[in-house]
Image (cartoon, rainbow, N blue to C red; front, side, top):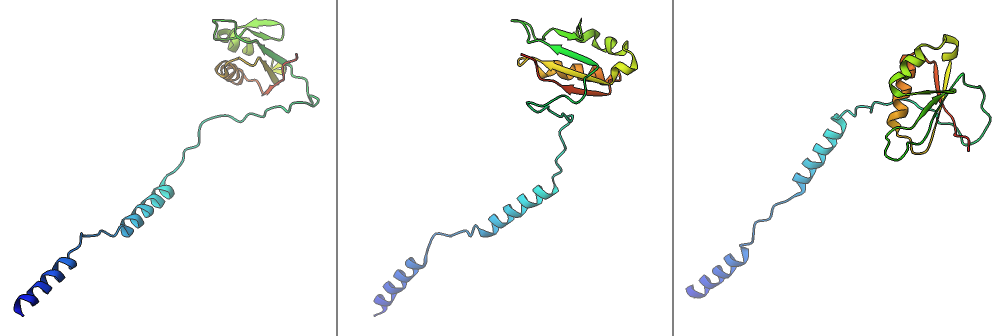
Amino acid sequence: MDARLREDQIVVERSERRAPQVDMTPMIDCVFLLIIFFMLATTFAPLPGMRVKLPLGSGPVTKNPTLTLRISNPAAGQSEGVMVLNSEIVSIDNAFATFMNLAPERKDMLAIQSGRHVMHDQIVQVMDRAKRAGVGRIAFAKVAQ
């Protein structure tokens, strides 16, 4: 009987041995708490930029601009289009001097008309030079076709 009791103990001991299990619930809770903490503690810096009021597709213009700058689409192999201020051809390099030489009453408003393929960089450079020269407002006009 002693041998039989021993076999039962061995069977019981073998059946009680299982692979260890790790409870993942506390670790998942900690990860979620860390995610929430970092989301709340992070400050998102606003992207630098400028406010632009885009014109509606149709409608009458309320005020005629005193300055109109037309930028044509760049020719093949060129990075910048030709710029015509009222009826005078200007370049990016001399745009600031041109704006500075204008009478103060003509610097009230600048309307920029550009082709579809004009790079934004050229438009932003013109806007920057116009603002530094004292142009009051900048508008975007639809290109007449």
